[in-house]
Amino acid sequence: MTRTRYHRRDMLRALGALLAVPTLESLAPAAWQARQVPRLVYAYVPNGVHLPDWRPTEEGPDFALPYLLEPLAPWRDRLTVVRKLVQDKARANGDGGGDHARAAAAWLTGVQPLKSATTVRLGVSADQLAAEHFANVTPFKSLQLGCEDGTLAGQCDTGYACAYSCHVAWQNETTPAGKLVRPGDVFDLLFRGGHRNEDLAELRRLRARRRSVLDYVRDEARRAGAEADAADRAKLDEYLSGVRELERRVARLEAERVDEVADAECPPRSPESYTEHLRAFYDLIVLALRTDRTRVVTFMAANEGSNRSYPNLDIHEGHHSISHHKGEAAKQQQIRAINRFHSEELARFVGALAATEDGPGSLLDAVLLCYGSCIADGNAHTHHDLPTLLLGGGAGTLRGGRHLVPAEEVPMGNFHLALLQRMGVAAAGLGDATGVMAL
Figure 1 (tube, rainbow, N blue to C red):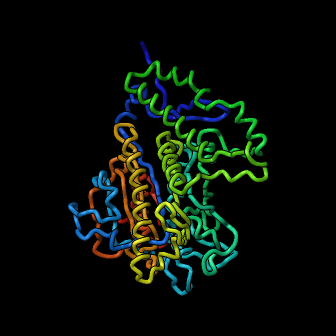
Figure 2 (figure 1 turned 90 degrees about the vertical axis):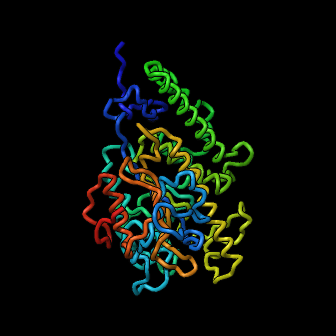
Figure 3 (figure 1 turned 180 degrees about the horizontal axis):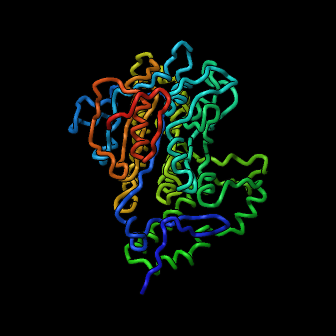
């Protein structure tokens, strides 16, 4: 019997939206079975890190993982700790205070932001150069996500517009790439054709008559499964179960208890805890990459200068305030605990990438994941030897298991150009980059 060949971007149509099936090797073209495509993910954490527990003490491949990197031990063969990266444009350079705003603004652009509370001027970011390259390849050229709102108006840091502190992705010198902060909105955008802009009453009516989106695609999923081999049928079943579970979790996190309160008092659609917010976004990134909805993602765990508390760690003072510890041992231990928490959540995300099949390997084999901050020491606001991790295989373009210590300082832009090169993006330059870093 001749089997129908489905391209991996064939979609299952439901509710006027599109849901992509995972790659089914037995039905895919032979060329796809032998290759992967790289994906680029930038994950940003604010306020620097506790450097004594971040930096390995040995160079080369046999370095011991310091405390803050221990959670990544299962994937150390896919981990590169990158040292001596410097972002000069995050420094004052005559502009005075405002290191947090400059840090987020310059991290992916290499451009000194204009110091103004009302006028924004910066430059295009590395992720958006990659996004333009894939603009006609995937349904979404990029995703910008974050756990805190992307405020555009007002002043947030010593005379700098809030847009700088709240965004790392920039379309051009005046426009940040829109950041989404609600997991449900992202899920709808990716798999239901757009945001839910209906008012609460209409939303209740829609929810009352809607079944799960998967119920509408069951027949087409069965058709694909009937022509696949046993391994692919199992993969399809696993995929459908995963999407259903994610949809249930997002619905639970963002449940609008409209039956218990008046419409005007309905709480915002946001997760119940910061941990769940982080995890929902990390899982959505995996799902978006797995279904090839996009190949470029930026994620801000929090805005730069965030003063979020961490009651889950019994830390009730704000992160930014604690980062200015002035050498106090107790505050340094709290910063250490916050950094470890973020490393553990990163490790959970990396584990999910490693467990997700993608062509001949895993998503971790395909991804280029840069995790770090544009502030090194939060107490001193330093912008050299920035805490930077590179995880993944870049579809065969990157080897891990390294503590990479260049002989001299390297502009952060040189590092970004090296990642873009592995994505197949030929960028003429980026901010103050002086060349392409050897990785």
